[in-house]
Length: 164
Image 1 (cartoon, rainbow, N blue to C red):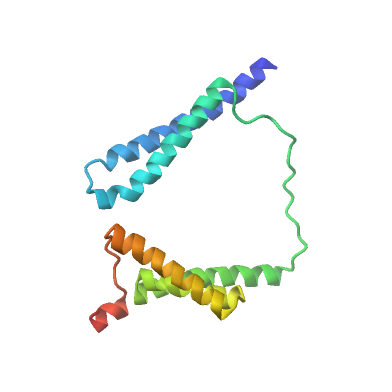
Image 2: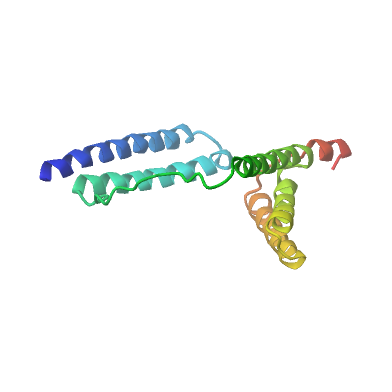
């Protein structure tokens, strides 16, 4: 039984070590970048390094994931294919609409617009809640991305044509 546990730990530790190297490589790759350009990649790489270090240590000590009962993944066929197709197309439409809005009016207005339209139409929330959530989203994005971090957010095609 002990060798079975050791055999399971080796792949876990090896996988964590590979991802740890990827995270450290990303940190090293972004070291010459300006802080604004490197902020997000460094935060993500730092989280990856911390998580993989913890996983590698836990796997090496044998404190990692314990074997549990097998889970049978059986996907149900109880939804009609037409409904599945419609929902898939709706999701693709929302993603495409967001990308188109980001291209036309800019990323920040598109995010705020997406929150409002999605909550009101799909979520069927009240106007009061939808507008409140939209205002909170705008304040958070504008305050964090523009005012605090001074990140340049490109204008959309229409806003650059208007000459904002």
